[in-house]
Image (cartoon, rainbow, N blue to C red):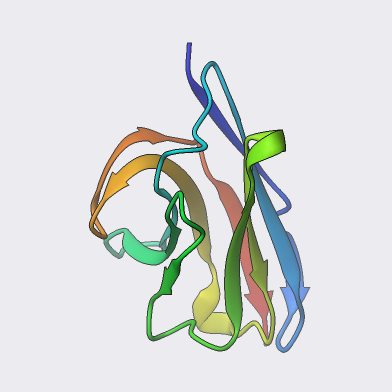
Length: 118
């Protein structure tokens, strides 16, 4: 059974940093495109960042220069380093695997809440 488990969320002040982790189990995703998405209260889920098996990355314009996605294939884990956090980054953050484009993914985690206070 495939599982994606996010961790690292929490409450942080404006300008602070957090590092999210997503541990995958049940199969290896070393050849898979992994992604991070977020959903703020009352809004649609939106793409944050993705990393391909080659290591190439893409980030949403709203987080470019502040967030960085990375992966450790040996640990079957993907990370999201979030710096210079803003109150508008407050959302539930979801990890996903086997992603195509910026919307379609086959596997999803349960999410971890990130709250940025002003």
